[in-house]
Image 1 (cartoon, rainbow, N blue to C red):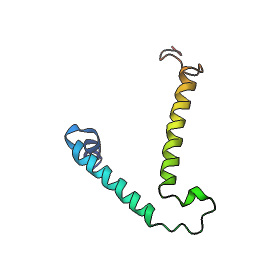
Image 2: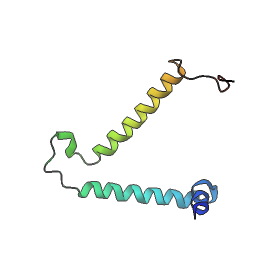
Image 3: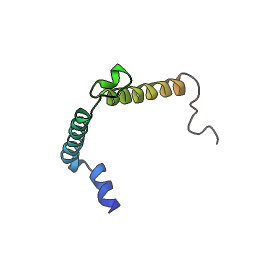
Image 4: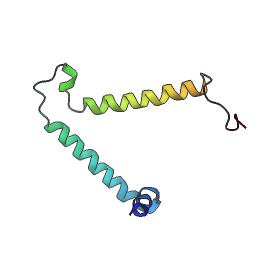
Length: 84
């Protein structure tokens, strides 16, 4: 079972099927987000469809850039053989 899952996500011959599956999941999430009632939101931006997805994606991108900056420029990253 796990071999089939690993092959599906790792093998290049399933790329088109994988891409269609991800687009279908994305479309279903967007449709579900549009159907959610937003009458009891506290803030104005919470009423925007897709706000949570945009905010989450932006936060992840910012987290990646900040961690890469700290690792490379901030001196936190060490050589691979640092402890040898």
